[in-house]
Length: 289
Ligand code: ADP
Image (cartoon, rainbow, N blue to C red; front, side):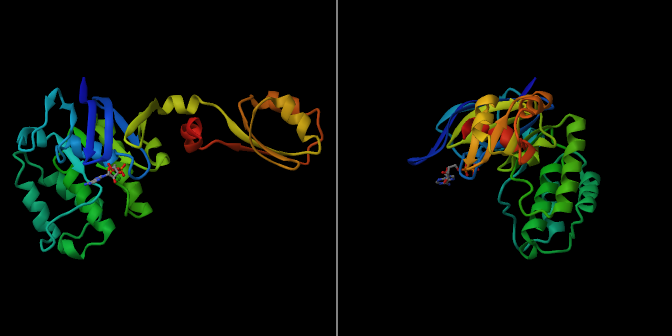
């Protein structure tokens, strides 16, 4: 079943483009990485899903229904972590969590307690005294404590220290195992590759491409740097894309299998040879360079 379905979403802020004709569906249990540079339209899409901005066009369905802000039942099924967390400054963390807990009809205290412990949150602290990272942790508890079926995370790791990020990923992996659907927005691709099934790239308000992580890894290429006095001949022989050339140096995007590459290079005198694995970023972005 499709748990989230966005059809032709368009949102302009006056004349400023937020997103245009964006369509995207998430299957139940899927973890989807929503990748794009700052200002690409990720938050606009997410705020539209959460009904926090008025869209110009399009439909957004959650479990087949439009989400209304005051729909309590549906709210219980969604966990939302905004990119910037705004909470009541003069509340303590405990008061803030108690307040949110009181909105839910089901028993969630136990889960809240476990999350607070795991994320090492001090509930006695005042919200206004929290660092960015600690505020983020409170936001994570608020998004997760009611055990939502759909998790919407907007730049969830910004501000978290590396150890906390790891704990957070462990929690997300457990959620994934349980069958929670996750929309994970970030500008860091390597981050989502750890848990995502599919990745969508958004740029200047348009969803440019959607691929599975498996497909990404099948795009098999690496980078080969060679120094040789016979560099011209080598370039002609390999017939691969040259990325950088400087004197007797060349960097090539190589799609040949290693044995074939070595065989071809064996005919020439080489001063240097370096083979580097392509990063996930290289695999994903090479079409756009
Ligand atoms: P991302 O989340 O990918 O960083 P956003 O959705 O926040 O991108 O922004 C998309 C575009 O919409 C940007 O050009 C941004 O400046 C603009 N934008 C976002 N929010 C507002 C707003 N409240 N008023 C005017 N423009 C906005």
